[in-house]
Length: 337
Image (cartoon, rainbow, N blue to C red; front, side, top):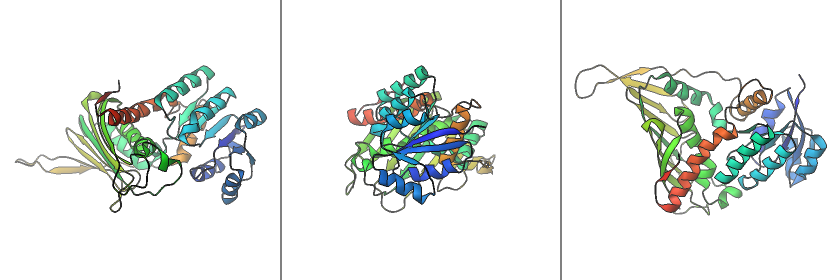
């Protein structure tokens, strides 16, 4: 099998998760890295023991190498231009989240990918986590009965610098995009309407609103309630957050990286019926996180499977995120679809 040729664009901190995923495969060939600061790229590549060319001009690099694939790791504000340039050069694109800095840009990329007959896929890497696949499987099995509500909490105190520190909505657009995508992944449902509030915590080291609450109505009348903050010292959650999914027959809990637990209503008579715990099997995945996204993308490019987080699908996540931001700006509930 001829390896797919890859050009990586951007060698910032997130690239440390991508270079190992790329180099463990023998069906891809990293031919160049494009980075405005070549010394940064050289340092990253040396650290991971990767030997490849470092370039500074994206268009010239694509013209020179004509890669099958571009992996876009740039900051959100630059993503639209990078993906547009890659599509024009005939490449398929796998990008970091968010797909774009605005919803209009995201929808434009969906149309551009269709016109170019190329795949654009977003690495919502938390979908390739065994516990998350177990949560989705439990919900899809119907063991919880009819879904009623999904609750998510995320609290961290990450002292980022760089672009995150300067974003208008660092919590919603940079981190909650993961959690709101997980809500869609867990339930298989899209948002219908959203009410949200963003705020500036006392002592925040972010320029933008680093905390938020989101109340959304999903399809089938399922309620989503989400709370999050980047400025929460002490008793922090892990980056996957803590989740409670409530159904008519029972509840699923998932938190702190432990396997999900399902408790169903018992059959005891009286005020409280008691509970019975049932298993929620956790699968073994051949690839996880960025490596999982890359594997799914490679199989999609080779025509072996549909891309699970295509740009067209990922717009559903961004619709929820940007509706939350619009609601916070207006103080009103926003219709999504």
